[in-house]
Amino acid sequence: FLADVMNGNIAQNDIRFAVLEKFSSEHIEIPSTPRAVVEAHKPKAWPTDDDKIEADFAEQEQIRAEAEAEKKRLVKSRKTKKPDPD
Image (tube, rainbow, N blue to C red):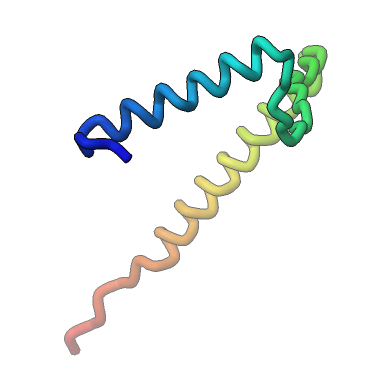
């Protein structure tokens, strides 16, 4: 029983530390669940293949050029002539 309830947390903390000190002096370990060790490893970098990079770049450029040409073709086909008023 504590006369001053405001000191309850301090007393509880002191008791916990006293228990830990006693366990330590008696060489008693507190068991805990072992956790899996996760080894973080970074994958090795791929060697640079300049020919593949250039081929990929050329392919992307060709795709962009074809898309641009298709866009221009669609814009031209959408233009209609004004109807003849007669």
